[in-house]
Every structure is written in structure tokens, then in C-alpha cells.
Length: 83
Image (tube, rainbow, N blue to C red; front, side, top):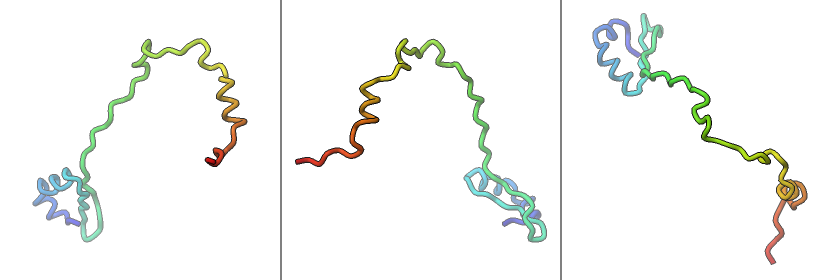
């Protein structure tokens, strides 16, 4: 923890420490007052629709697959032991 006077004197050193990933606490009269942390640039806003026209679905893609339904509902939970 650094006091305010030391922080004023060594600000560039403290900024380098924060840039390296360290959290630097600055105190006044032994009481924490501020924290220097590394700057993380904000992520760009995600824009929907960028794959428009590149993805398609067949006409029957949402129709139930009877074979799959049977496997999921009637198949044993555990495989038979090898003989």
C-alpha cells in the first residue's frame, strides 16, 4: 500500500506496476483511498446479422427424427455388458 505522498512522487512507477497487472492501493493516513489497476479496453459492441445469407436450414430441419426419438426414449440407459 502506497501513501498519497509516495504516489505523487512515484506516479509513473506505480502506473507501470499497474500496467504489469498489479493492483496498487493508495492510502491516506493508513486508510485505503484509491486503487490503480491495469486498463482493459472495452470490447466492441457485438453486431447481429453478420452471417445473414450464409446459413440456411432445410425445410424439414425442425421435423422430429423418429430414429433419434426412439434411441433417446427406448434405448437402455447403460450399454449391455460385453460377453
